[in-house]
Amino acid sequence: MIVPTKDLFKLAYGKYAIGAYNINNLEQTMGLFRGCIESQSPFIIQISKGARAYTDKEMLEGIIRSAAKVFPEAVFAVHLDHGDEQTCYDCINSGFYSSVMIDASHDPFEENVAITRRVVEAAHAKGISVEAELGMLGGVEEDIQVDEKNACLTDPEEAEEFIKQSGCDSLAVAIGTSHGAYKLSGGQGLHFERIKAIANKVPGFPLVMHGSSSVPQDEVKRINAAGGKLKEGAKGVDEEQYLPAAKLGVTKVNVDTDGRLVWTRVHREFFLEKPEEFDLRPAGKIFMAEYAKFIANKNTKLGSAGTLPEVRKALGL
Image 1 (cartoon, rainbow, N blue to C red):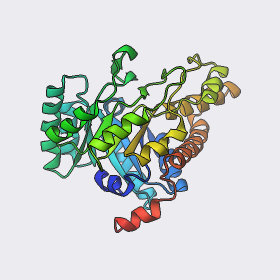
Image 2 (cartoon, rainbow, N blue to C red):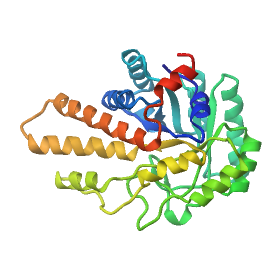
Image 3 (tube, helix red, strand yellow):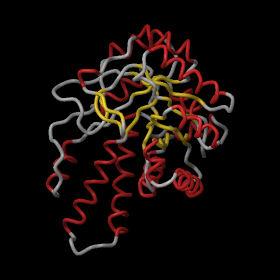
Image 4 (cartoon, rainbow, N blue to C red):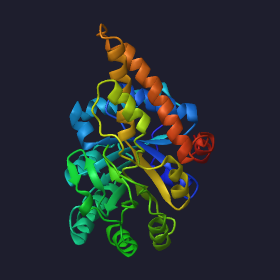
């Protein structure tokens, strides 16, 4: 069942994080639902601006509605990821989304506040919550690219003022993560002191972590062994850091890149081992099973595994 994002945040805050997973097609959707039911986790389906344009927004929405019928015990929210102002309005007016993200983080502080405030007013009028972003992550997120030298951590005092002025319901903060497959090198990781400082300024307010994939090196090596040419050595977020961050107030954790790596690994290996094969379904079945396993593991690391019964009870489902 689709539920308000804010309801999931209230139940999770300070205890665990809700996994927010980007989907683009039927196979990802089926694997996501199966993995969340297997791990007994609530979750958030994220649809990006790029995913909405990949086929057609109506197709994705139809797949999600069908999955909700196939898996009636599932509890999830539907979220627009990295939307511009016009896309946010389109999603708000569709009546399908639980929440939207307005990403004006590349604009000056005052403009970011103004744009976010407009989206908040439109969304709240229809009972939809809004995620905003403050600070800049390095790396690539679809059509957004930021050099590492221009990335900057979120300032705690600015975060407090931004939330007050914009009225947003959750805030994506820059705390040491990076978008895309080519992530942090060396021993960098989450800046826990920065998370604490932000949370102390806005106690009880849901923080969001973007760029949270871990980029498992085993996946990268297997992809390359099957003909890929991904850069090796890139590092994402250590999965063991998810739950400690959640305990401090990181309530939503975005994961996209790792799921793409699973898709690439499964399909490269399948067609390398079976070059005579042309049917997409055998590979698709393997991917759905592997993706479900991947999702269940992520939910375990986030601390949300096993919480579905209490979530359903708390929401009266």
